[in-house]
Length: 207
Image 1 (cartoon, helix red, strand yellow):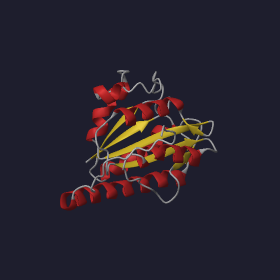
Image 2 (cartoon, rainbow, N blue to C red):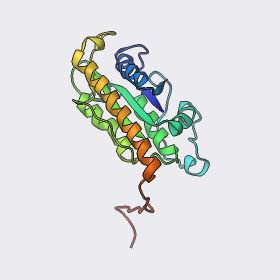
Image 3 (cartoon, rainbow, N blue to C red):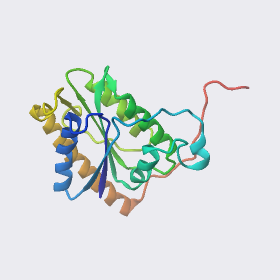
């Protein structure tokens, strides 16, 4: 099994990386492979709603989004981690996620998702809620921990001193590993849930 980890911080090796490394350590104990993609700091533009991907199966902007898409398709779980900027997720990461989730047409059902927020002080829960929306629109179960998935720290290395936050990361990784393994067993026996044809309903329409 494998987990794809997305680091939305522009500071490589910073507090967001420390939070992910704590999870990674537990995943390896659980015999789960990991790969981290560093998104923060990249030059990533937002979605233009051009619908190119609907026809071509890939985003019109051939960058790290298209490079990450096959890794997303093959993973069993996805962890998205972001520092908090103005009470919400890093804008570069949001542009990346908007395009990644919209442009990938493969079925994401039962891939396990987890979001992590890192902040000096406030904005953790707002960022946590913001990131979870990508999972809940994609039939992806959301892994939880013993508290909201957040770690405190501003200067490099401070996150590891947040003993409760690091524990939350470890519990989150163990819970995510359990979910992934349980879903794999369930798929073997029961398959995936029955699908219905999507019924689109626009709020403004002509009679």
